[in-house]
Length: 296
Length: 247
Image 1 (cartoon, rainbow over the protein chains, first blue to last red):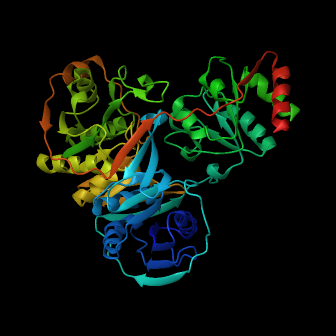
Image 2 (spheres, helix red, strand yellow):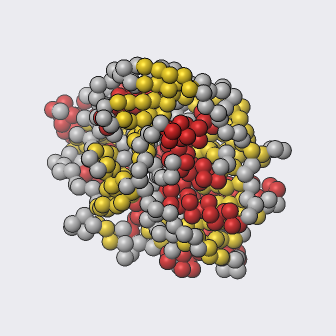
Image 3 (tube, helix red, strand yellow):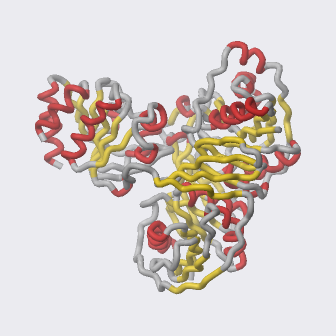
């Protein structure tokens, strides 16, 4: 029987992770850091965490607990907290975590990852006795989500040196790009932030989410980082991806090339995006978009 | 006070070419410091200037650092000195973190160890997380702002749906966001001064790899219809609308 361990730090994400982890084994054991008993797991080791500490302060005790219980396959989510827990736990157990991999074979565990800004895909075979995987949403086919739901309270000691002073909820709505059926992507073809309204109007008509290329999120900061598509951002697999004013650098393409249909609007007919599109319109987005919105 | 900025040089991905068999050719790709690593140098320099501290750059690497242009580039952006730690360029995050941990221990007292969001070649975003665990020091990722306090540092950290304010004792290991600062562009004076700054080499015994690399290949191209229209916007928009309705 293969046992998969997960580290949960919130109830919703923890249950989703438990369901995904079931793709890798037949028994899911969760170390639940303040996330309670997870119905998706077979056994939850519930840990009460201090509200005055970031949960990552428990990373080394989590590693010691997992080591004592013989955990060999450990999965975390790809959130900021999930990644830090994964790296710290793996280091304590003597290895490196695989980052946002796709698991290609579970026999000898093979995982793939993007390298060189998306230019290539590396396939690795995990050889360390303990394997830590950081999985992105959708990377594992999520199987049956209900687990046995047993629990056991465990007391863990945090390490010192970090104090959580304050947590402020971020304004704005959160977005699930990975689950979106249609996505409209905006790039530097837009001359001003206010002009993004054109893309938003189109997206509303298409019932699509709005996303962007890296310069829009990390250059001019017109959109939040979680809406940016590409190798260091989100990866999507929608039925339709419509790229507007995006040239189509490889770093962007790796985030969107699993879309079923790709449509591009760009004023430069030599833009690389057209080689990766099913339908392309060469033209000024400021002229094409209003016409397109009218005809939909 | 001493602040360490960890950086990595990797082949410039804009100049990597892909062969017909999907293998990569690096002949034209010069080594470059990762774009996100520049955030670590910049943050280190800004904090160091506030308190009169020293900034040491550390990089795990090999032959790529023989390139004087690369050395000057690193040293012209705010480092006072550079330490090259022996290690394979394709080392995994645990191997890199282990080599850095040994080199930092040899360096002696370091109050703050800064890293970027991720390297330009692997982008695992894990070296800082693992380095902190190996050094047994307070560790955070996604740090968007750092201010020095009487007893340590106060950082602003970005989560997916929230922002945390965390106080950390020193020494601490912090990995920054890409938006934490705007890295400076070196001037002529900085580039000239860079040639005179000390570069030292440290040899460390590498640890075992976590994984065995099976292959590195360009992704398979997805077959697309590549239908492209051009001309009067009302006309092309109508064609696009018809295409979208046909889906």
